[in-house]
Length: 186
Image (cartoon, rainbow, N blue to C red; front, side, top):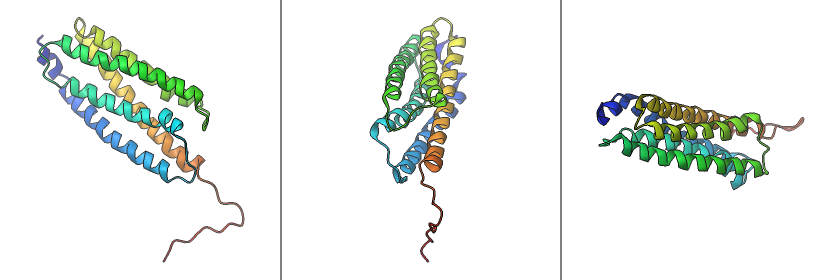
């Protein structure tokens, strides 16, 4: 099957996934604005560990969706492009793992390790193997790329929600007994 016919069958999927990744990147900027407005500030190492990777993952999904929507003359060229993304993602995931081990402002729980470290590493590894397989087993390889995009989209949504709930619930000081709740200006 010619390259364009192979990739054309996935066009709607990548339009949906890529558009979602772009929109969710904007959502993460809103999340970071909420963090900035919270009463308790965080340090840059915590943001580098828990905030920035979410934007990177959304951008990786957008990039891979764009790459596989491009009119490649051969699958080997698309394979090389997404292979580079997969390799870079594996390296970046290992950097995030190292950061998570050394973060001081917050102690990651099991859920944090799974969603910030394990699942992204699995997704980027899947992308790397899919890129290797794309030229000789394109059907399973393209399903592997789809799995990569969906894992990172759902990881990003989870992580953005987790950040919002953490800022809303855990970091806001609760009024103590006897303190009066401030009234809004008239």
